[in-house]
Image 1: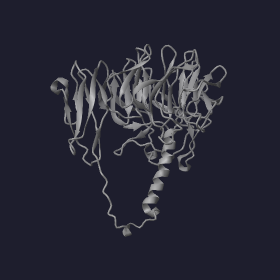
Image 2: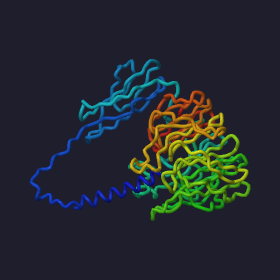
Image 3: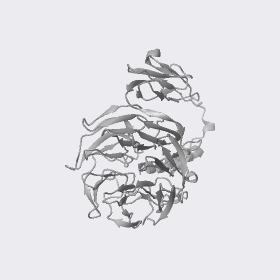
Image 4: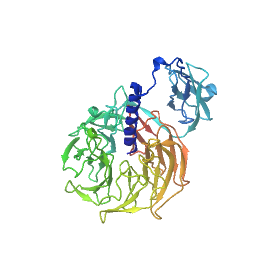
Length: 474
């Protein structure tokens, strides 16, 4: 919700700036004898302060150069060959041992300007696949199937201009929304086409049901509106089948598989982009796979979108944060859904407001909540947070805040086989529930947001989206 409001405010500021540039001021420049003073432009180079690289493996380094049209840099390893090897394109090969080492990017336009990343060798990290996804996409879903393959569905196709999803600036590529789907086979590490949905959609949800099929619901359609349609993907036939619609169209909602096989669909945004009519809803619905139909569930205490929903060990569902209709209270709300009564009850609020965060149920039943932005922070456009908290259902309380390596929003958090949580944005780190602390691990080669993380049957994690490049954490 914060990103939508940020886009609206940015559009307003842009319009004001255009009016001012077109003669909004009263001063006549032609009568002013004072010559204009040329702006002082300073070249700068920036890159992450630290980088985790698996021992003996490669990582693609990138640097951002500002203040000049010449964006080229030269790469060096401060420790020489003992600290690893880096190519002219920034591909770094790490040694097997030692460190920390230091990789430096120096501006070609102004060699006095440079930035350095400290390299820490790690025992685990990312490896780029030799094959790519069939379509580069964002705002899609990725679901692990019973046979170990991953179903990748919908989203928006990226093009040469990149991936954009700013609804209020009307730069969201509604005309590039996808109905296609593809399968990733971890045995061969290849992608292949499968059946397509009946409509194109993005920001939808996909939930693996107990019978092995996948429920795909909601999202945005090419017309810029929220949709209520639902369909089922059957891995046995590789095809989608339309079923009954939800009562309301919604996107940026949550869909949680309950212990009895039903699916709780909660919150989200509804409306149409043409009239800036998007708004969060507090409604919730239940999908029954036995009848393939939807029925109302009790409303949430507050409207929410870009929130999280976590199934707890007792079968209840923790709904946390998200953008709502009112400030300053929105974004800190927490509610518990009880499947026995089909109703929500309010719970203790988050220590700080969050939307676009993650929530991961740990093996001991607690829930790790990381990052996100403040949906009421209009001045900072929902600046991402670098904090994390742990919710304890036994005491209905939150831990003190823990600091992560970087501020994150729209990132991923995946429970690993060893009980730790892999948190990934432009960098990666591991949360250890035993010590309630974060530790550095190997960083991704594609440091972009809106990527989907899917834990595979063998414990590795597949990352897709933002580009056609896919990689695994292992």
